[in-house]
Image (cartoon, rainbow, N blue to C red):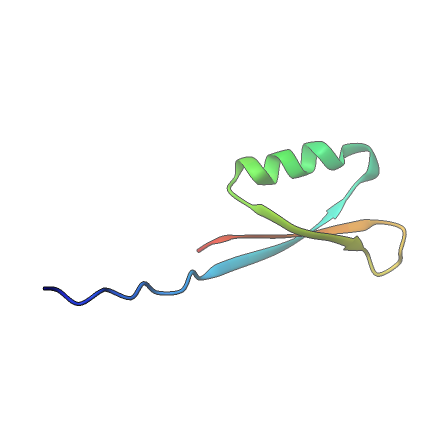
Length: 58
């Protein structure tokens, strides 16, 4: 009988992307098509714009 193999934890890369109110869907669709997963959307530093936080496996 062979020993069970342990898989390595997934390594992630991260991106932060400013979102434009008039193009939010298009921006997120493009990043999603490139393999990025949306993690969170939070207000940006000035509060005038939102920032998307994304991740994908390395």
